[in-house]
Image (tube, one colour):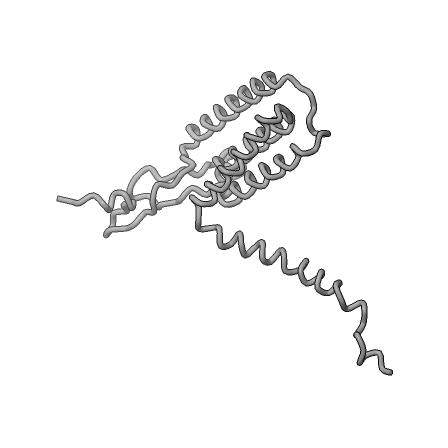
Length: 201
């Protein structure tokens, strides 16, 4: 009797199904991220829920302060990258001899602020970091005994020094890490979307 007419090749059972599922999972995950991209408020609302769950977990177990400290350092680095321009004007000044500046007159060309770390990647990285930290709180190996007020004070000092340096960098090179509306052109004069809503006499 031909084996092909029987139950089939035993190796063609669960292995192809598992490999197909493994290949489809990254595509579905990427599709989910693509659909979530325009929903900024909902994404950050979901992050707030994740952060609250982590904070409650640490509060109830009264531990894992080292994990929280490492998470805080990582979040601070992400935040600085979020506030920094994609091209550092200080480095460009050293290379080209002149640093780019944002337009200061209405006749100047509108150049939106381009971040080193885009908003979506910032949200994705910080959400993933909180999820990983939450999982780590279920492993006692990461619950290192430490006097947490020292870590908190050190993180606050580090945050203050880092933000002061970032603000001084903004003032020196005259940029703001936010774009308030898209520029539109009325004749020869460039106006922002906020200015366009003001009626003229």
